[in-house]
Length: 612
Image (tube, rainbow, N blue to C red; front, side, top):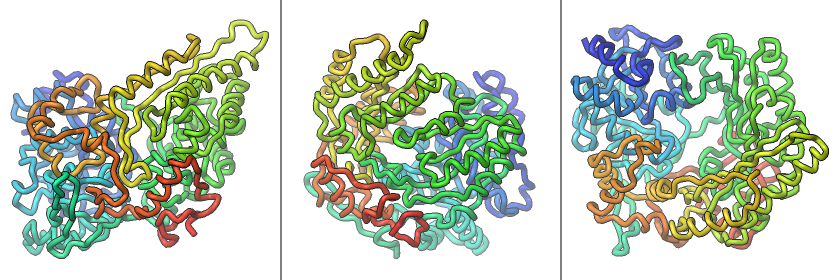
């Protein structure tokens, strides 16, 4: 039996608990009573995938149906993959230990661009052809969802179906359709044609793409009755949507090992660089009663002693204080810690500080993004220097002596003066700490600056902008270091080659399918891990395929260019993105959704709290 072979080799792996299943909360079903089996694949290691909230939600949702069975699959680390290949063990699901090539669906969640070669590796490890055209039967149908499918084009050769937007409703609709057509003996082509009629379902093989002589997209033409544009799915009633009462509890440490309750979706802010802030619109929030009920159920059922309130900006919940007070009645009594990630600088308060002090004892993290007010206005960050200093003052007076600040380098219109502004601002924070702690012996402060290279993303006002070149980024990194005059400020950078590849894959077209395939064939896998990332292999893949990465990353795009994702509708109008881009060039800000609708394209009927 496959299970016996797995158990025999698991102890040879670095972390055997990743590969044996059997965790508390995992769902085991009788295969003879199952109509549709779904292998939910996270194209990264167990430690990362088991921390992902979306996987937990869809795992519980599908398994709530008696005739559906959803099982978990993670990418093996390279040590265990070697053992699998040497012993003839195909990629399997943790619940049943069955090979996933025999499942009805193999589904991937695409959370970041650097997972693309891992998707191919997992398909190959499963014993399947990696290209969709070489998989002929009705099953397995390979599907993909998640934020990266807002531009799925670099992966269209490998995926049968992309699921756009929020998955709670459309996943069940797709599986119900499959079950119906499977019983009728339908072909893969017949199923794909029927599936393309479901809102939010994109079948890439039903679209032909033509290119201009300059390699830009000339036209995207649907066929087989597919829609001209595929529109994302949106959950309208956030209070009644499914949410799990239980999580699978891992045997080993994972990145975020705690209960998680989603308190809102979307973001009111409109930061022009932030893809999540646009593709997750409209802004919707759960009621305090729903949040409290879900928190209690999860903690009671899992035994977790920490719960995190998940969102893009938790402190933007309209009833944040009422929520925290209500939760405290339960968490304080049960000695459960409350974590509030995604806090905003401009609404950080002493009350919020009091709530998070039990968890965050080592330091606080805030995203300032830019060092000068002009550049913060360009990116529509809508925070002032006074608000940044006031937030740090609140933290320092509350006993904190460590603050981490996130900034980006290479933002549109950025100058060396803006880079110097990062050093000036952080020096003011250092001075503020010592002013507050004047006369107190032994008090010292640590300010960490983390700088990432700006990556232009689809469906944002900056989708037209070029990424700064490697030479430009190195110049700015050096200038920043030259401007820092104290050891109290530590500075770190992201890998520039990683940022370049992210930009290429984020804004790429179908020509990148061959590049990704070649990079995987050369050995690229688990690229989001520093120890596995090999940019030289990617460069070789680009060269062999005759593709210039600078064409995708470092080229400014005109407003009238047809984007590779032009047929993918995330409900943000291109006219709005162009307006926002022009305002950015003039350093003019746009109000947030709470202050008034700015006409982004999202409709009121989508359930948005502030949609006009």
